[in-house]
Image 1 (cartoon, rainbow, N blue to C red):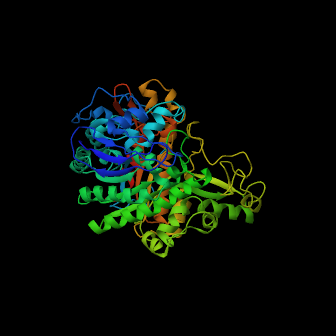
Image 2: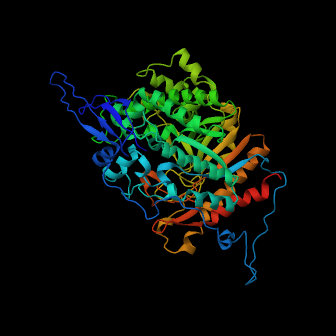
Image 3: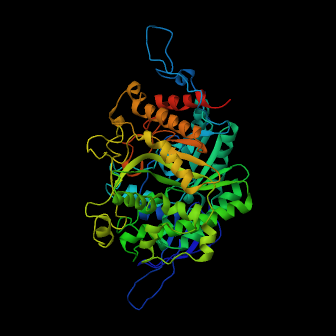
Length: 578
């Protein structure tokens, strides 16, 4: 939408100062004022618009032929026929399959939600359409060579920005009841602060209304890694406490707009991961004096303050909303029964899930081993901040793909914690996918492009118990992303071979059976979201790693269900309480 901005830009590293001006041209403009700093820093006056941000920091972007919102076409009945072994054609006959009986002691509760998930930059495309400002990921994919191993971008992605009606109609026809998506911050506020893009809000109005039209529960994530470029270049993005106020205002805008239609909210997705992106590649973004090793922890500090402020705003508008952080990681399995490995396991929890979970669910502050390190450079939370943070997550939402075997460093934990140059410092634990015999892995591996991922579904019940017993979430536990990259799927060239995905299909069946086991043992699991609604830009892995339960022909933007989609839904057809 039309928005002008006036701000001061110090080209050699000072801050942007933003204020709203009159609305006019489609891209808006921004004027930078001159500043003199005794010769140490030279600045000049410049005028920038949203279009200038794209041109100067990102460059040309690709578009797709479908560039207006399209209505869904009827879903062909032939595309909704499950694959073997769920279904066999009446002719020819003669197939024989082993009998798989239903476990009558298992069930998903009636109100269990089960759906699919996607994220704005990974699926939307249309990156410059209707006033969207650039994000850090537009720079990373366009300007930083090999940051994405395939040198691909999210310019078009799955063209979801224009084809979302078809996408929602397809998942409704499949039989899932929930769709989790993220909102692009720089669509709502092209500069991440200041004027609001009404056209973007109207777009997400219709995404939400389309979900409700198809009886799909919409779940909204406010931030899924796409930091507005303007904020990153003005003060360092999540590294600076200024982002707390900017994110809080963005949350206020979105909560105000949609709180009456959307019940489930996630403020930030996987802060362990996106804070771990820092330090960003040098020479593409604003410089910072924060040491590289400390940057992700400054990020995490500001995330907790920003999330908790947003949480209180959402609750003040509608106290019935479910608002949470999406965590990530995996179950931590001690490699041996030694005391050193036991400590390593606890350090692994403290530097991963507990980093955000302990402040949100238990104390308002960091866990023991992480805090020992953070106290050496971070200002501790004040009493007021701890009170603001504590209790600000309703569901324990976890993107739980896999598990890890944990062990102490070869040199010992104590030697690691006293040596800042140790490769495992500051966390000082080690990981492997192999059991102690150095032969058997935790499970079958995903695609070679995801070396962190194996099918560790045997450990899901223990993990679910741990989440509930440790953090005691009042709204239960939810698996808000899970899935596996089918090995070498990108090498398949014919549709019939692409849509048969046996590793992924087995993963979903075994994982959901593990959840059913945990439910029968008293764990309050409230929902699941399969990652992903379809193949998409898997961040630095590009489009070469596939997680989707639908295949997308990126040339034509046609969608096709894979076998795993039917296996996923069938588990609820069988076990959901009627």
